Amino acid sequence: MLGIIPHTIDEYLKRRVDAQTRAAVLLRAGFQDGKQFRLDTEYGDAECCALVAAIADVTGGATETVFDEIADFFLDWAEQTFPGFFAVAADTRRFLMMQPEIHNSLACGLRSSGQRKVAEKFRAVELPDGIRMHYRSSNRLAYFYCALARNLAARRGEIAEISFIEGDTASSAAIIEIRLKPEPALARA
Image (cartoon, rainbow, N blue to C red; front, side, top):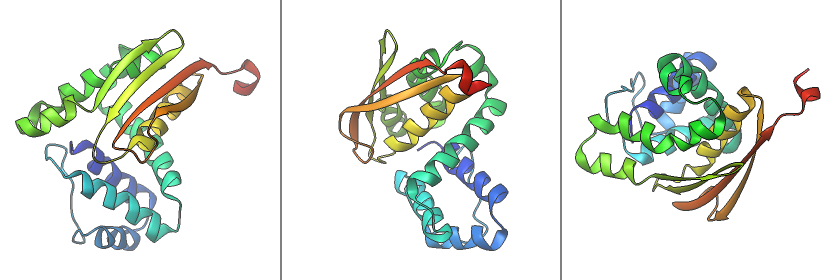
């Protein structure tokens, strides 16, 4: 896994919880207190999943709620760190269609086996009102992908209606349809 996700999860911890809670999360996830997650380092999928599970355990929240909060935090961070990815996509659908290319460009620093895993993770098919994403990953983070899509759509004045054609949020392979529609004007007021 790219270091971007564990790094961002750790930044989320540093900004949202006190040092003692962060230390408890790291220990529960199998890391030493004070562990730093680097952007330019490859991490195992299990490490990322252990971090999220530990946050849920230590804070008493549901895993889905943790993913939703991290997705929102991640988008804030990504829009500041990689503004070009967001600038070239006028709407949510175009951004989601770029996911395979974005992941592949960011994976260039990984070992070849890691690059291959990233390249095989997403395959996007354009639909008239959204996309169909073929998601494949042993980390089973489809829920995180869906949370990112929902949050991105909301930021762009759209509503993302998500359904699983095959698999579910815990599957290592799933086909996800994301239908996008404009948010009603009254909801934005």
